[in-house]
Length: 159
Image (cartoon, one colour):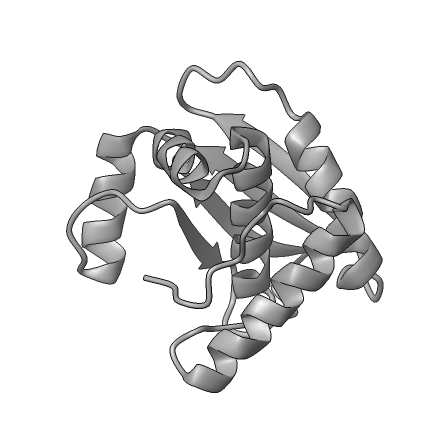
């Protein structure tokens, strides 16, 4: 089972229902083997731009970044809680809002898609190669299908 802690570092009115629903879908598909947890941070565009430039050497704010706790998928095991910490997912709601409008879905749905995308990265999935991209798109679609969000569009190209 995957659990998450939400840290909103920007004004955010949607609460955490979007995250709980995405976690429910992810748990049905990928979180069955161990007790995992992740940290989810919501940040503004300036902070996201800074992180994107520092860690990916790309200019501008991006929608989501994932920072694994360890190279292996096993992550860091918390001795007290017996949970595996996978890492942190950082999402920029402003960028997500623009993408939602352009993609024809709600902000809630876009945030869920971004969380799932970031979570797949923490589980070791990448989209640098055509094969990796195809696998990630397939997994995102399967997880989102559980939620029955028929109008969420999964892109076949990632930046």
